[in-house]
Length: 184
Image 1 (tube, rainbow, N blue to C red):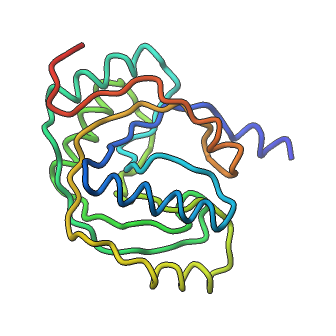
Image 2 (image 1 turned 30 degrees about the horizontal axis):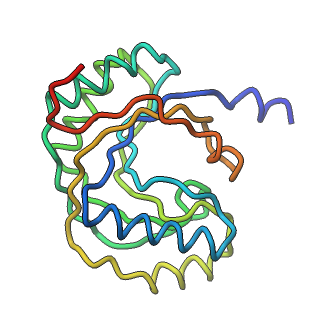
């Protein structure tokens, strides 16, 4: 048991937040699934990078990334699922050049050499549930758009790896910025 505790750490996750109308649709889906499955609530997001827990770096990273990037539109591939807690049920997106550029900007600004691999997806549910239920859920959800525009960034302090509802409920936004903003 001690080994499992040693491998967990506090990190800063950099999230890309969807613009309206996708944000409202996705938040409603997350809220509904959380209620139905007694799972944690969270903000819809795509994780761009996960790095060291350096508050000062996060305070510098978001303004730099927000200045250098405008809103990003990404093609949605559909709903998928896995047995990984943080990818129970999710919208899968195409990895495009703008997402890769934002990942590079954030990683560079954070001066972070973590091994995080960008795999653009937006989780809808964090809960251990049987594969048959996940499959049925994935088939039952229809995303009413083929592309999603993202227009904001957040830096969130969290436990990594996230393994439980309690871990999710400990997430704390430490700073946020709109993409294309020039404020510091």
